[in-house]
Each structure stands twice: as C-alpha cells, then as structure tokens.
Length: 56
Image (cartoon, one colour):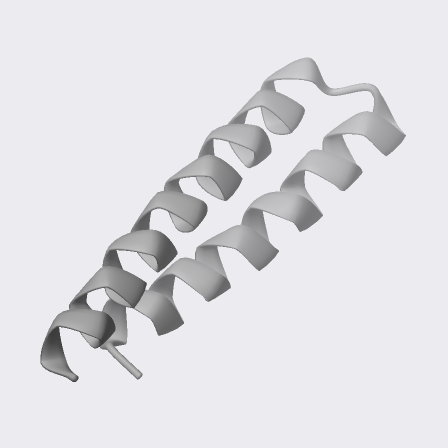
C-alpha cells in the first residue's frame, strides 16, 4: 500500500471526527475544517490508489 493511501485514510478519519464534533457543538468553522480535511484525505487516498495500480 502506498504511503499516500495510509495518510489519506488518516485524514479522512480525522476530518470525519472534526466534522461530527463541529456539528455536535454547533461550531461551523470546525465542521467546515473537518469537511475540507475529509475531502483532502479522499483525494490523497485516490492518488495513492493510482500509484499502487501503476506499480503493478
């Protein structure tokens, strides 16, 4: 597994936690930051998946 995939998965998880926490406490900035981090993680995970396919 490419390191980008591992980092992307971690960012997705962290972003989801921030998003949920922001929604729970009513903090719009924290929720938006979580959504942005989650999206960045999805992109990085996708890039890592492409790298894995190219290595095969």
